Length: 299
Image (cartoon, rainbow, N blue to C red):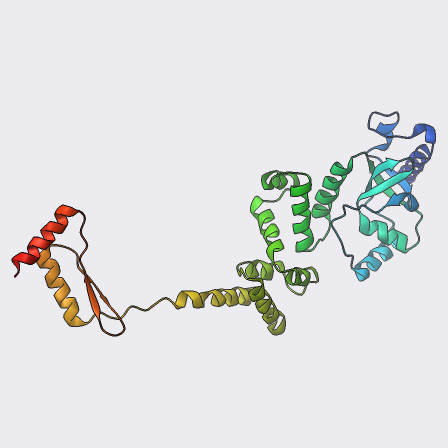
């Protein structure tokens, strides 16, 4: 118990240090920076602003109330992470649910790790930490991956190393962003799963995607059912291939005899009306003349 008291006192001491304008820390090289950066500090909630780079765009109210109840009972177990903007000004990097839940129950302070970072570093930290720690929906994760690739200017391979995910996993998430926005919203609202979305990606036309999406909702189709539906949807085009008419017995017998006489392959094509064609391939001029002479000799 004594250890916990000492830790809290240390946090309050560092908070007092940060309140002193003569000790304003702006970079990791400043005096006392080593005491603050990376340490747990009690910060006033009023001095913290929400991170505009936060990938999570919606928060489940019921889940937030449950977290608030837990914090009221046990306190904030896992500190949030902030970056220092200026004197007594901070911005959230990760932990917005804890931040919101703490405000919900009227807390004045919250334990926080302080980092000093520029906007790009803050964006990267916010996205990477939220992807790893928060229960984001598939579209939020996909958008976070996309923002990291585009705004931090890294490749999928580099992103794979930073977030500890296989490149194929990242690619599968990014492909979800090709779905119609209505379907993306359905995934975010948990009407369908990522498995449903991955099946729908195989349908190129968005109108067709939406038609299948409505069937998924209306018939409460499983992922496996959806995959089968997509396969059947694409199959008719393959089934429309013309069916070859069977070669009549007389023509097939004659083809074999002619192939023996000419010492060459002979093909026959028969239309639906019963009309046909004899096809005798040749390899070069000499082969053509050989076949021609064979036909003349049969006269």
